[in-house]
Image (tube, rainbow, N blue to C red; front, side, top):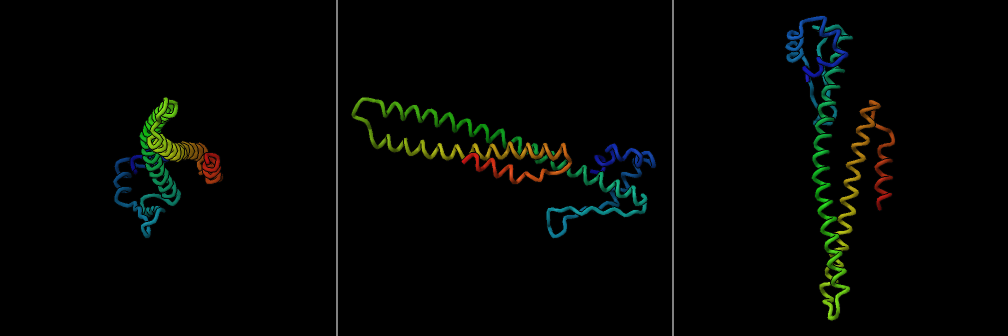
Length: 175
């Protein structure tokens, strides 16, 4: 994180004010990051000693931003991989359901005697698969919306206030 923080544009004046190697070493020894009470909020502290107060704030902001960008990138990459896998599963489910519906149509339109038990079983199976497919498509939509919200927050620098409503409306529209 320290290397990433030092390469940020806002750190240019700080990099020029001292030797980069010495600053990196001092930061590695001085900066502390903890998650109090095993929470989700990170507390970063840095003694003022080597830097003045403004430079310390600038450095803390750069470290926090670098950490957030790295974590956000990891979350996006994980979500993208999950979306690809999930999309594959949804596509396989669609193909399987389509094949089952064709089989059902053949069974129902076949000349007598029709196997009523097999037809009833296949109808129930198709119904359950349709329901499961709908739930999976909703989850896929949720992934897409989460990515869109992340993109918006990346462009605006803050998480959209309407994010919960967007997700809720999408879920309601699906059902």
